[in-house]
Length: 87
Image 1 (cartoon, rainbow, N blue to C red):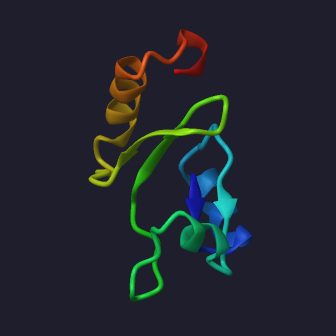
Image 2: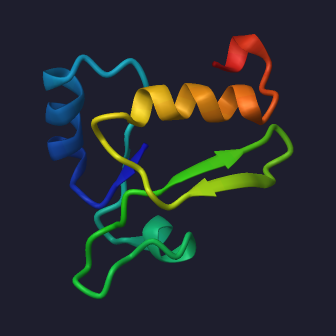
Image 3: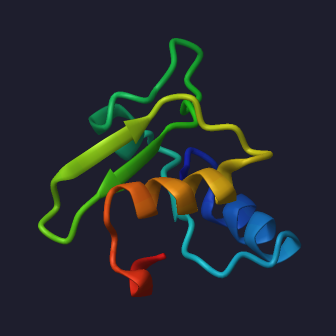
């Protein structure tokens, strides 16, 4: 996960939500710009990129819904044929 928030804000978010994954802090918006997700208002759009082991983007979900993101992520990984260990 990547966010344009500061590392302090992201750390607080991760702790509050018991995140078991890393959260990239991108306050300079370098990554958001590189991936084309930066909106005109300076916020990152909630898109999910599925990147394979070779670094190739397999799929982009431009309709990420926070309420269903976990289930959607798991379903997309199955559909993409990801190994069970990656799910």
